[in-house]
Amino acid sequence: MLSPFHEGYSFSMTFRGVSFVEDMQSVDALKEELREQLLMLKKRNLMADHFNKEVRSHGSGDREHPRFRHSHWKVEVESLQDTVNNLEYSQMDLNKQMQVIMKNQAESVLKLNDIQKSLNDDEPADQEKISTNQRLNLLESLVNKTEQQTRDIQSRVNNITTSGITKLHGSTMQLFNALERLESKYDKTTDDIRKEISKLDYNLSQTQSDLEELRDREFHQNRLFQI
Image (tube, helix red, strand yellow):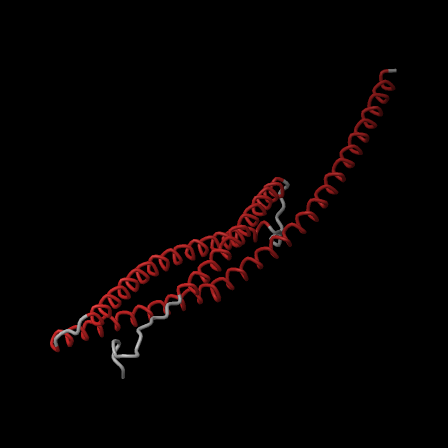
């Protein structure tokens, strides 16, 4: 195997920083999309809360009514928010690790370049050359280890952008569908309540009319008895 400083050998290091940055940008875009979806979900939750209060004011006891399932959906929304927060914390941690790795890798490359330049300028003594080669091997091992850490981080990012984001999108779609059904039932229930109120108004008017008629009869009967 050629030494790093053997004639015709040039030391080079491949670093996938661009790919890592693209992965991080992809995660940022997905997080922004999830934030927008969460805002929409929270707005719909406010509508659902208002609807639940309105229904409770009319004393509805139907266990199939959406208000009994709404608390579960709210828990799902909060769980989705927690997952997004965890995703942000994980990305921050990955960014910090990546910065340390990039710094160490850059320092290693500079040291290797300095040593290579020194060896090219002067031919060291055999003992010094052996010591220098040992240091080079150590630095090269450090670079290889750094590249492996970089690949591990990229693998973790890929896991986040595939399984984690897919799961978040799936949960979001389920919540959207559930809230759409809630809105549909809200419209239907509101119409039913209005119909019931109309019936009550009609019955009340009819009762008042009957009561007036009874009072008139009672009044006439009293007059007859007085005569």
